[in-house]
Length: 299
Image 1 (cartoon, rainbow, N blue to C red):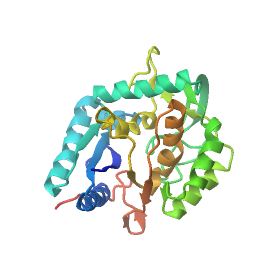
Image 2: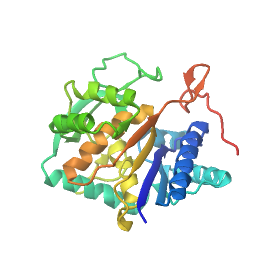
Image 3: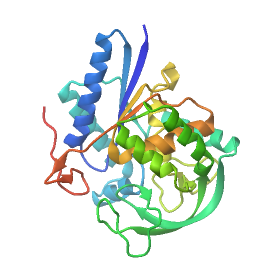
Image 4: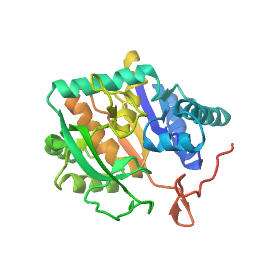
């Protein structure tokens, strides 16, 4: 029997699930059942992304430790999926020790292959999106949320993303089905045809994250950590690579640029396809926790 591996995003647990999360998970569940009807042996993974400064601050605001906070919210996600009766095979938490070991393994592979180096970085950070905003300056706000950016200066490890520019362009130009729909593919190609800066993949100004091997005080950047959850969930069962990553359009760059570059650097197989859907809107705005306009899911 042919195998098929599908994933939802690894959902960020700074607050309880909303219908945007449910929308994607319903779609993944439907695809799983359809592929099973076609005779495939299908595995469906979802999960929770539990590290980063936004989680750390949400826990502090709630008067909890990050461990207690993330466990409670991860359980809310799991209980919501049970109510809907989704046919999930894995709910991969990024706080799982098995996952931490796998992220460290990716780092070591990229380091040994010459694609990671240490340097100093100064930039403006979006706490909401857990990402640095290129070309931002003092006084700028997050272009998506309007929230203030935070200026950060710290010693980091960097990933040589610039070394993969041509390979990534080739990947997307020669494999038009790798990223769909076509509008998302065109956006990524336009991004790749600009100068591609190297990517900071560790942080020293926060504590809540997976520790970097042999580097006290360094933890991994949340996206270097979270993307590996797709791999962690199934690698021991020999189910990697993913046949389909189902995601929202706001995280296309992380999945269609950073993720394949990390895997190329390690010498590991790439996912076969990424599909990035649009957003559910509320008063013509994206529905999101940070905007406070979310709707809770009920079956």
